[in-house]
Every structure is written in C-alpha cells, then in structure tokens.
Image (spheres, rainbow, N blue to C red):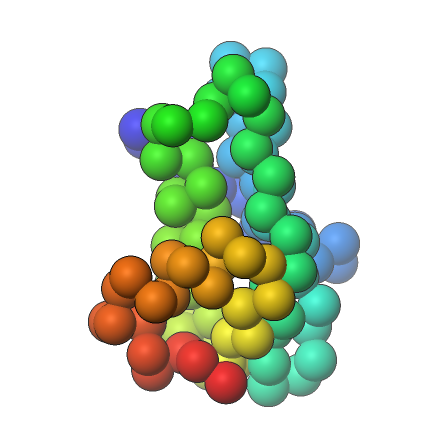
Length: 91
C-alpha cells in the first residue's frame, strides 16, 4: 500500500484515503506527549494494514517531534505490546 498518510497538526489527526474511504487516528497534543485516543478504519479497508500504517506514521512523526506516546486507543496499545521496537516512544 503506497498511499501516503496525511498529518493535520491543527486538527491533531492522521488520515489516509483509499478508494474514497478514509481511515483516521486522533490524538491529543500535550506538548511533549501525544495521547493517541482513537483509530478508525472503515469496514471496506479493514484487514489491509491501514490501521498499522496510521500507527506507524504517527510513531515516525512522534520521533521526529521528540514526543512520547500515551496509547489510550486499544489498537495502539496492542500494537505497542506486539512491537517492542516502539518502547522508546512509550510515556
């Protein structure tokens, strides 16, 4: 999947649009901490790695911004548990 993820810093949202369907990840910017609160992927896009792509884009942006992650969304929390290489981001 080569569709890029967009990051809207004013709305605190990562999004990806594929075939007219949009997947989203919302977060609360608390300065040095991003609380990832919600991930949504439409039924038409589920099972295709869209949520993981959103998480990975958020983690890349967090590393570049020098912020930590508070995984309030259950998908993000599970992703972090399964991927120990993300431990450097955990708040």
